[in-house]
Image 1 (tube, rainbow, N blue to C red):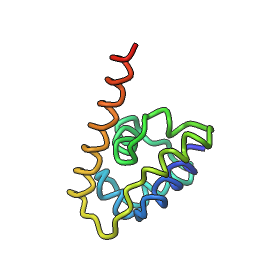
Image 2: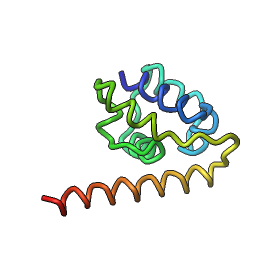
Image 3: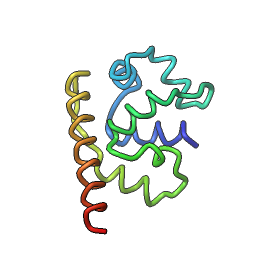
Length: 108
């Protein structure tokens, strides 16, 4: 399920395996193995992917299609992003996610 979700989110964002693997600092073949389920992704990689896609870590494992559709709806679709651009997008999405969490906590 995780591999399918990674592929779904990558494609929804119009990213190639090459650019995602460059962003993660790993070989493309290693990333491909995460998507096919031939290899388990380490925690730090999953954390970076969650930041890149603007979702919580546990959303990557979610079987709830509504959760994934929400993440896909917020996909940042731009052609030809550099690795540095992707880092900036991920940092911004992480900032927004943290703000939303703090807002929920403050509302309680």
